[in-house]
Structure formats: C-alpha cells, structure tokens
Amino acid sequence: MKLLVCIVAIARSNRTQFCIIILEKKQKLNIEMKKLPLLLLLMILSVTGYAQIKFEKGYFIDNNGSKTECLIKNIDWHDNPTQIQYKITEDAKAKTGYIKNIKEFAVSDLRYIRVTIDIDRSSKDLKKLSDNKNPEFKEETLFLKHLVKGEANLYLYEDGNLRRYFYNVGDDNIQQLIYKVYRVSSIQIDKNNRYKQQLWTDVRCDNIEESEAAKTEYKRKSLIKYFTKYNTCIDPSFVNIQKREDRDLFNLSIKPGIGFASLPYRNRTSSNVGDFENKTTFKLGVEAEFVLPFNKGKWAIFIEPTYQSYDSNIETETNPSFTGTPTIRNYKVEYKSIELPIGARHYFFLNDKSKLFVNVAYVLDFEFDSTYSIQINAADPTSFDLESRTNVIGGVGFKYNNKYSIETRFATGREIYGRFNAQSYNYKSFSVILGYTLF
Image (tube, rainbow, N blue to C red; front, side):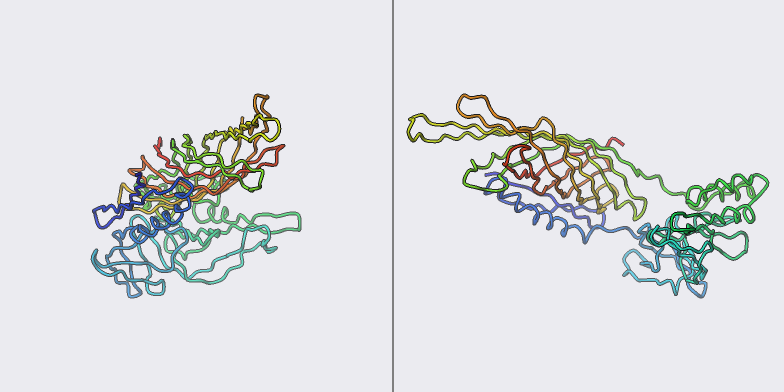
C-alpha cells in the first residue's frame, strides 16, 4: 500500500513543529488529483494563521510630544499607512495607533511624519488626464515617508499608482515637488516639470550644476541621489538615515521535477478507444522570480519555461465478422512541449530561514514534434500533428535558506487536439518540483 505524505511546517516562537498528514492512496492518479485541491486548501489554512511579519523595535511620538519606545509591526508598507500596530513589550497585546494621534513613528530604517499639506492627486491615466497644466491641490493629513534627512529633506507619499514627492530645506514648510502629466488636445499630452525649477531654486549649492537639476527624474532613486549630493555639499559628514537592506529582488532557479500525467478523451463518443494510460514523466525548468520591493518581500512574480514530454499508446482488437481476420488498431500519442507559466507567488515567513509559499500561474504551451498516429494491422501509420491550448496551475511549496525548495503543483486540464483530426484530449498533470536557487 502506497502513502501520500504531506508535511506542513508551523512556526511557533523559535521552534518549528511539523504536522504530518497521511492520506491513504486507494486509487490511481486521477482520483488523487481530484483530492488535491482540498489538500492544498488544508495546507494553506494550516499555516496562514502563523505566517506573519515580525514586530520590530521602533517608536512613535504622540500629539503631546511624548515619545514611546515600542515594537511596531513592520509590513514594509507600499501605500503610506494611516495606522500602525504596536506592542509595548514582546508579550503584550497588540494595539492600534491612528494617524490622528501620532505625529511621527519609526521602525527599522523607516520613518514617517504626519503633515497636513496640499497634495495634487491628478491621474496620469490617459483616460483620466486633466486639461489643466497646474496642480489641483487639496488639503489632506498624511503620513509621509522620510527618504532623505538632512539640511534638505525628501519625502514620499504613495497610494496605489499615485506617487508624490515632497521636500523642505531647513525650517521651511514641506511642499510638493510638482510633476504633472496633462492633456493639451485630444491627440497631444505634455508634462509640467516644475519640480526641476524647484530643485534648482531651493536645493542648490556650489557643487551642483543647473544641468543636474534639469536631468533629475521624478523617480525615487534619481531624487535621492540629488538630495544626497546637496546634503553632502552642505555637510561632508552627511549620512542618509535610510540605508535599505540589500534584497535579492531577482532570483534564478533550476527546477527539475516529476510529473504524474494522464490523457483522457475530452469528448466521449461511441468511437472512442479509451483513455491513454497514466504516466510518470520528467520535467526540467528554469525560473526567473522578481520579488516586489514592498511588504517585506512577501509577493513575487515569476516566469518558468519548462520542458516536458508524454507518450503512450493503446492497442485494440476488433473481432472478425465475415473475413475471419481480426482488425488490430494501434493508437499512439507523442507529446512534447515547452510550458511557460507566468504567475504570482505569496510567501508566508515561518522564521529567518524557512518560508512557505503559494502560487498561481497562467500557462502558455508551445508544443513541438507532437503527433497522434493510428496504425491498422501492418499498414503504415497515419499521423496527425498535435496542438495544445493554455491552462492554469496552482502550487504550494516550502523554501529553505532562500536556496532550496520543494513544491507540489496541480494543473487544470489542457486541451490537446489533432490539427487535421477530430479527436480531442484533456492533458492533466500533478507534479512534485524541486528547486535550487543559483542567485
């Protein structure tokens, strides 16, 4: 009797417990594949409650100016927050601090300050462009992320696709660096790059040329570089407060795996000869993963070109009616392709070295040297080229030390059909995939 063993890692404090779910394998692969979505769901639910971002040392300052040292839940915000979760001690219950009560907070190398300020939220979506060249300000109370702290300060506000930069020099009031895309006519758009003049007027020193302000882009890296140069000019000992930790935002991995594939007929008729057999196949892929630079690296997108193949045959014998000679038919499928999954992945961190992940992807399939053939008795076989359609995959896996991984992956049925033949098949597969990250 064979057993299917699934290991779910659950992190509690500094210890890792393992919950072993043992399912009796009573039937063939197609029965197991029907059970797989439920199994994956159980695995996800088992770990979701435990996979969380850490509380890290930080502080906040309230409206009275009192500074409270605490532990703040650092989720590496993409959108600027309006509230935070914090604990006074490690064992204390988490509390919520709201923007109306907090003037400033910091965690790790992130610092946010509360300001009531004019902000232009004009869209850069071509369908929503304003025909007004000037910013359309509205007063709001926001947390601004402090990017550069010195004689000249640079701040950032993000909300979805909206990104606005703010600045001040010395004790001056904080104001927005003006950049706006606007519509001139139904066929022409233009840009208001007033921020370049603001830089040259307000943030300049002897070591900065006007051309440098003119070449500065309305982007984080470019603006940080400009403000850092200005502050270094004013104070040669200047060191920026925000030294972002090095992150592996791009990972390249080798992904060998074993697949368990079946090829049943898609549309059954009286003329069908039956399903092709379940086969164990080998596959080899290379995955490029791009980790998104927010939420502590919990989200990623990936693309994984993978070679896979499947071949099988069925032989049937028709009893003679008048001739006395049986008719033997041999049906053969040879299917090879490069699968191209393009998808998203979410990580659940268990501890500093271990993490679980779930992913889903849309799969393009590029078949080659793929045929369906029929041979009757000793006659030459008749062959038809095979073509394939797209499908979707979902997977659950475990990664250790950002180097080694194992994943179980389920694929929805993929239609395979003969180019000049009416037969249609439903390629189904379940895979166990190993991974080794090169860098």
